[in-house]
Amino acid sequence: MGAPGDVKAPTDWDSLTFSFTETDRMYVANGTLEDGWSEGIMIDFQPLSLSPAACVLNYGQGLFEGMKARKTPDDRITLFRPELNARRAADGAKRLVMPEIPESMFIDAVRQVTHENRRWVPPHGKGELYIRPILFGSSARLGVSPAEEYMFVVFAVPVGPYFKGGMSPISLRVSQTHHRAAPGGSGGVKAIGNYAPGMMPSRKAKSEGYSEIIYLDAVEHRFVEEVGAANFFCVKDGVVYTPELTGTILPGITRLSIIELAKSMGITVREQKVDINFALDCDEAFCAGTAAVISPIGSIQHGDLEVDYGGVGSITLALFERLTGIMGGSLEDTKGWTHEV
Image (tube, rainbow, N blue to C red):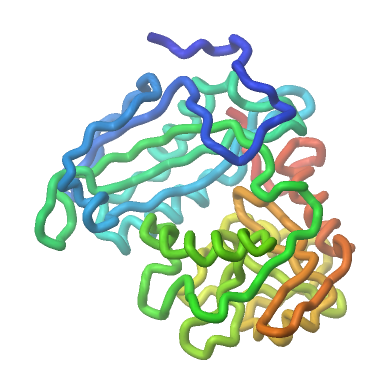
């Protein structure tokens, strides 16, 4: 059965949220450490068949990527820097002892999934098609060791804003008792096991009226690491600061793009350890990631102290408008970041 192609998708674009919707088609490939990957195929969206002893289910041997396809004002469909997702996935595969996916294979799979689910790409300005590549140990394994067989799966879902309210400032709370990652661990990899431990502190913060949690480092408990599943930025006297990559922070593609974009706009960027007290004394703060893109931070609660940054800062807004303009095709892409499908 082929994809419905350009038949109108059964969805209301104006009510899109960041949630799951079953689409038409997905990509599947199988591989081993010894022989690499078979040729992937496109199939109708469907459940996967796995042994209860699959390595990914028992030991978390798996990683995922997140990326988006967008409609431009002239109705083209573009991807944003997919080669960086491919390279990050390859680095993660090495860390988790899984067969690396060749960059050309990764990008081709993403392109195929985007094309065959093109009716699910929202109109320009109404949302995006979120693409989720996953790589995991699929064969049964009782002992704690790498799987013998692996699966590479890519599916896609139409989504709206990650944080409700779009560019409305969000409120965050600093975690006093939990950490996202520790030195020597897998914090710098988009490993599936990194995310479940954050669900409890995140859920608790949301139940108390906050949008998300801020994690500090696990050693000194004073340096900002990440905002839930997004990278952290703050602005002081016109200078943008973001935590340096030390192996405990995910090397975000949106993070890198903001750094490169800010520098091209004449804005000084400093990648360094960011003390929470310094961050609380800054003029602006925002978080960034594939899902959120850029979300301004309105306030941060840390212990008994709560700091209000006010509305959306001027540098935050300038970076948001420039980055989303390039991503969505309303501004010229002079950097070659967007790839037409």
